[in-house]
Image 1 (cartoon, rainbow, N blue to C red):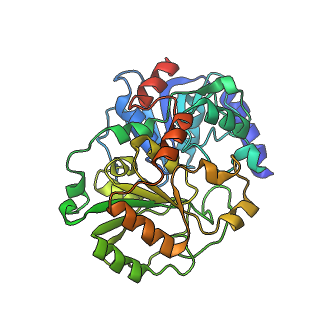
Image 2 (cartoon, rainbow, N blue to C red):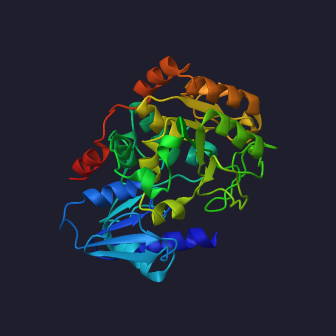
Image 3 (cartoon, rainbow, N blue to C red):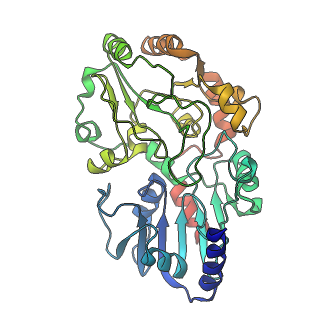
Amino acid sequence: MLKNVLKHCFYWVASLLPKRNYCYLKGIPSYDDSLVALYKRFDTGAYEKIIWSVYDLSHSRPFEMRKGTEFVRNGSLKDLWYGMVSKTMFTTHGHFLKAVPRGQVCVNVWHGMPFKAIGLLAGEEGKDSSYFCSTSPLFRDVLARSFGVREECGWMSGIPRNDFLFESKEGIWEAMGLEREKYKKVFFWLPTYRTSTMGNLIEDGVEAGNVFNMVGFPSTAFARFLEKEKCLCIIKPHPLAPRNEEEFPENIMVIDEEWMWQRGVLLYQILSEVDFLVSDISSVMVDFALLDRPMFVCFEDSEEYKAKRKMVFEPIEDWLPGEIVHGYEGLREAISSCVAGEDSSQEKRRKLCKQFHSYQDGRSTERVLEELG
């Protein structure tokens, strides 16, 4: 209750304060790929100052800092001040106040087109913003109902981070310390969280206690299998998931945001280079469909998950753009078939991609900035 009272109070104060030609960026994680894509494309001189709210000022930055940029610690008084007086705001999770103050424009780039219910559809709070980004009419409707804002506020621009899928980053494997030629296939495993550690503390599905979100996952046997198939699995836990300090054998590479940022690479830059994707119910599958490459849905606690969290689409299995695999053995078989050149879900993936994306190009950031004017 105290938090809501403070939000209301700061909202009224922010509505009275004159706005300055500042651009304020706030995301989870701090250097969210969409925010970086926008930052790289901002017109020089368009803003008097660019303020970036981050959770840890000591973290590496995966880009060259532009003149006129100030970094502030999330939750500090300076952060709150800039958030109230900036004329323009880009955020991945909606405005931090109860509503957008008068004189301010808040663009919610969001952090993925959802398969699971979020916001009002999940019985939680809405996410107020002046405008929000979506990838198609299908998701514009979902997000409008989830955030509690008018559908007309939705820009079918695409998400800025997806532009990195269409760009080749020179030297990315060297930056990551990998010899790409050693492997037939390199793939990304991107699970979503079961227990969140930030924001709304949520428990969905079954917490397996490992980065794979599979109970009793045999990581050593999996590594031997990958070595035999000459594959490398790069796995990045969700930023809201609990930290896991387990060490893994060769052919399994666990990374996080700071690991990437130290090497000057972004999640979607790596994603653009991998051969296929493994996930569960993560929105990354919507984005990866743009690459028209194989995906495997490894979602063994689906029934428990659906019992706790509603799905946006029913039956959800019809809307997942990849081959649904069952258990560890099913995953092994799917990977082996992919290494052999098979792609069983191509037709389904291409059909869904047309519904997921109005644009299938690398110009989402450009459209967002054009919409903003």
